[in-house]
Length: 414
Image (tube, rainbow, N blue to C red):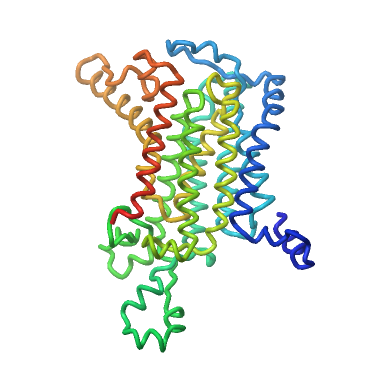
């Protein structure tokens, strides 16, 4: 929103205006502003929620200290969303297709989560928004993101670096044709992504339709859009399931966001992308500004959400942060790293699916449902085993850090 103003200031040689051209400066400012909004203005939002009696509705799960959380303000995801959007509007380039997609993701899932929380709090319906409506909303978002990435002229990735082309020429040819080498660098709109662990680390979604022969390229967009829908829905719901203990989803998301910010930076830099043998994604440097705001927002919210929590994010926050992580990874072509990077979300989701499936199976086979875990999601299992809430959260954070480091290391393991 203000970037054009910054460019005007630079054109008249206003002192310091040139700093806004640097991603590092704007990212740093985004972190600072999001932290300030989350910590300073967050307390005013919490007071507003308290005055409106927007408190947590507690279900009887038989957990220690459960009823102490009754009445704690929820819908705190509004703090996270505000802390993200304001810095992005101030320091981001709003004509950038990737930034626009991330803003759309934030607002769209924020509205769905807000509606869910509204029904729970004001309509006194503990079930909230019907699951089918949530899924429809996530599918619509997946369609918007997938179709934009596939058909927008502003979205391309580089297939071959100058070094790849130069390696095919003799030294003499390279010296004589150094400019031609640059011109031969290929950019493509094909639905391709990075594959971890393999040297030949390019995967084209169209290859899944190889049985169609020459027609595969005509229908490749279908497979790609379906993949985007699946990933967005899965990660968004995974974050929602993980949000069951004070600071668990918030801290985990901050760790994941930091890692994605690093991946976005190297993907937007031709030198680092060539060195790490990953795809160069033009214009994606603006995503670093967005993710910086995301990191600041989650850390700022953690100020009030850490144990004992003064506010809960509710579905307003959990659905949003999960969707942001999923879409962001897709935009930088790193979505195949999500099972590693978002391992905590994955395990939490799997624990629920395993528990429900096994219970239904044993009830049908033996007449009585049996359980693998004492309770699902997994964090409640450890609560019933006697672990304190703060210890569970801290250990999950440590696991998230390990997974984040492993994700970065995969860039060199080929």
